[in-house]
Length: 163
Image (tube, rainbow, N blue to C red; front, side):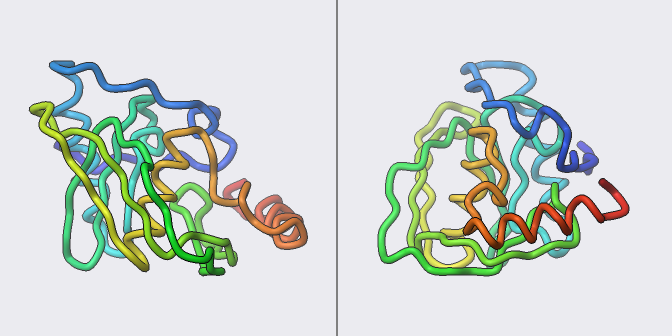
């Protein structure tokens, strides 16, 4: 369908918990097409529906040359000792901050036909799964930063030209 504009920090849709997609919802196919077109832009690992202004529970991913989507995802498993990883976000452009993430994550949801989908991975995939589910729950990655890092992040964000 179309690459969509990414909503930026401060937009209320990013702080809203996304509603589940109802089976057979005619908007779902168009949403998934837009999510896939939007995540295919080089340098993008994932795009949540609320990042393109849609308050529905779906995201797309583009990790290690694998592009896909999931509807109504729930984070069902994380494991390992949380590690500090540099993390950025399309909705907080131009910044990367160290954030603790589990090295393994698993999500479950469905595809457009309602078939069960399970995604799991380590490294960047684990980070992306956690990050995108956070978005759908109305949370930005900066909320999980260590207190001093979060203060630094907020100071930097307030000085950004897009703020």
